Length: 396
Ligand code: ZN
Image (cartoon, rainbow, N blue to C red):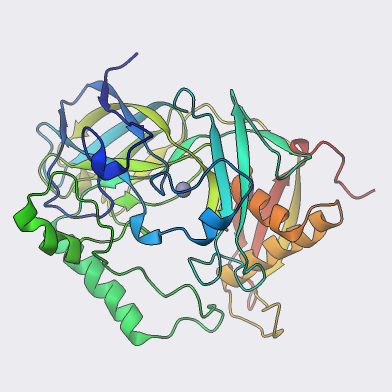
């Protein structure tokens, strides 16, 4: 077993761990671990909410979740000899649960506290607890389904440079200041999550620097040039990720481990969220960013993914479901319609809308942007693996 360099005590918050983690992006959060290219090591992670969600039947914790706490990350890791302009190569050798903590959760956030992709349809909080047995997940809150997981880090990336951080903060604030999103955007959630010092955890930052870094540290919510919270289910075991490096040592951090997730992670708390470990191997490609014209990370998926071969595919088009308004090649509206079509279908098989919404969020769903040129409708599709159900769901 590789040496564990970042250890988690599940009874303690991320700020109280033996090595404290962090929940904001900032180049001045000091590295807490140092490794060399070629090293193999284990990193343990808490779930993304820092343990706020409990293994019980009451969704009050989802309703009241403190979103200023997310995402708690393990790191930063300094990789010797890695400099800005290099590519940090990270192999995800293995990903799994922590002993004694083999469960996960999927939630629907309250419309007033987080919301989600379908928040105008499902505004109330809900929770599904998943029992994880080896590679399989099943839930007492969504009976009739069982599937193999595709474990992956929802969030992994290197620290931004001060320049890149300033760019993030500037452009995201400009969006919020503009105050208007596209016409289809629900009133809630807000347009972007701007820096917020409340509940900031900053690892081993010195007290004198804390206030400044908490005030300008970027929230971990969106994916950005460094990767970050990409929520890509196929970043699973055996994947090799190529990360752009912006600061000396790279300062790699990670967390938000998912046991499984559907493309889109639509309910926002949408994967099977869990604590866990990741075994990593790191290497460097000197000068790789210019060599490969890299702006965002590139990755090569691993060879270990669940094999589902039969799907029922739901189509969606870019027409608003409330107003009937036609949108121009809008993939967001189109994917929402595909999801709503799948939920309406699943309700015919005894699932509640909330159960179906959570299932599409966390089961191995394949979401595709199938067509984006056929004016005026984008066509998005959602492919539901039929074998995860304990009964036939194909129309006869
Ligand atoms: Zn997550």
